[in-house]
Amino acid sequence: MESATKRTTDCCKEGKGYTTYKCPPVTSHTKTILTLNSFKKGGDGGAPAACDSKYHSDETPVVALSTRWFNKGKSCHNKIKISAHPWAKVVDECDSSMGCDSDHDYQPPCPNNIVHASKAVWKALHVPESDQERMEIVWSEA
Image (cartoon, rainbow, N blue to C red; front, side, top):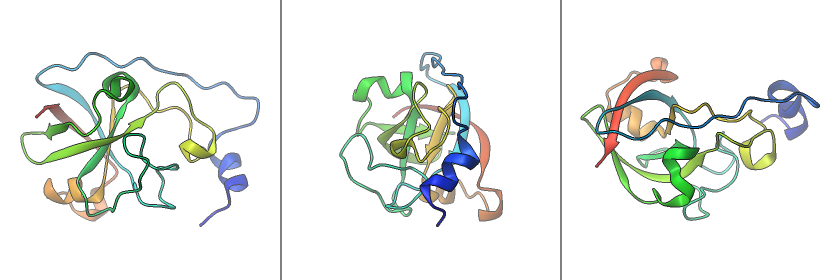
């Protein structure tokens, strides 16, 4: 694994400002981008999940929602339905207003239309591992 210092250089540049985002409202069919994220310790999620201060296995169907959808933790432990297939439990926020620190794995702020999902979610969607990076989806609260 790369050191935090190297990651800072690769992802966030010192002195550079990054765009922050406000998310659109959730509807019964919210269009968004599904991205792959590891919620385990040492994974690309950074700090433990915001909802329970724990790390989660890549085999558990969990997601992080962009800031507005996370709604200051009000979405914690709720289930969401992704493209009419699997459900996943909300355990974290994909922060659209902060980033570039250890809690955010030295990544810039999350765009306003992201659902970060564990490998288990991608597997339930029957997406081949080689294609698990970004995918347009529709989601709703379960």
